[in-house]
Length: 301
Figure 1 (tube, helix red, strand yellow):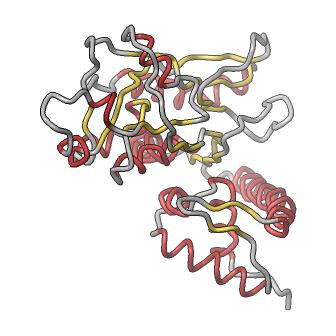
Figure 2 (cartoon, helix red, strand yellow; figure 1 turned 60 degrees about the vertical axis):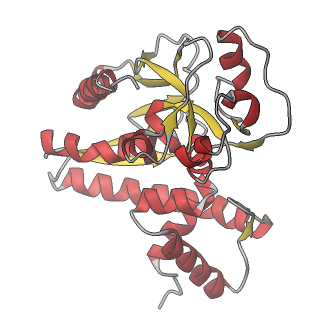
């Protein structure tokens, strides 16, 4: 009998290692953070070694974890392709493999996918997430990519489309905002949170309002969803795309703070791209139309 660990442990480990955060892994797998932590701990106990370094609000792989992740990932990819091929051979549900930036997958795309599945019950979606978008000329098993911050340079072999400009908003917990004295400008008195992976910075926001960047040390994150979570926890004000905070805004966990000159900042932040090939165009047609429609329906805050 093969000594293979519980597959749920491996899935929890892969998600947490890729996203570097138990909470984001929990959102992706529809579990609780404590369940992810328990499954990872069970895997570490089974292997007899630690795989992660635990930080305050994130995790990272140690050297043994990096080696295990490096060996495990292609095995999981091969297993996914085997299942897809078997389904195709049996005439079962066709599948579309989509690679999506992690924060968008967790905060915007994931909560909407049920609507797409209702519209297209005959099509299965296999969603992969990673901060680094793949090269579609090498990753031939991926049908399309939703990237964050940038699109591939001009390549006639690819079709690239923007998912519409997005408002970049200063987001804050209402309780933190209420702690300000009356008439105090928030941008001078509340801590700011940086998103290091975002193509838009606080310097851009201050510049659009004709102001110099507020000085001082800042908390920073390399995932937009983590910056939003930190703002909910009253650690400061984050500058993020509205798509990363729809649920928090609807639940009044976050509010949009006023710009000093009333100027909004918008950028093209997410891009859909796929191979410019007839077979691919046909495969992604329904998802493309749905994504563009959903992206255009986002109300301005």
